[in-house]
Length: 102
Image (cartoon, rainbow, N blue to C red; front, side, top):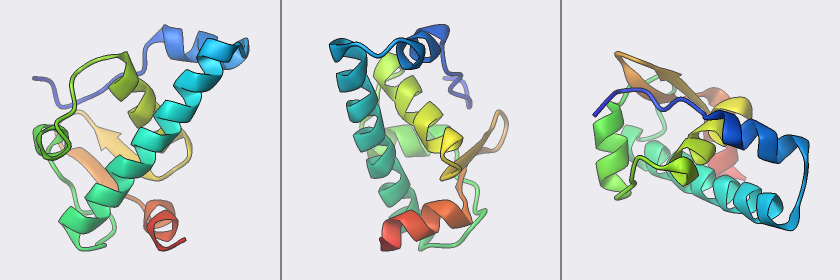
């Protein structure tokens, strides 16, 4: 398994032309992104910039390497809640910490 989830072009296209299907996908991506951020907050005890391997993140939430997971990670990074690096994994940002307290 790779340490990086790269958003595919299908997600960018869906955001460009809102349809009923793309709105549902965006809503589910946002919901899953929030779950990922919440779990990262629990796992890191709220410490910002604490790197967690992607396989750990994926295993804790039983995530699959699919379009829905890619969309969720894309949503979380585009909102500044998580930072992803290929060899390091994922880390919670200050914005992600604030989201979990909201």
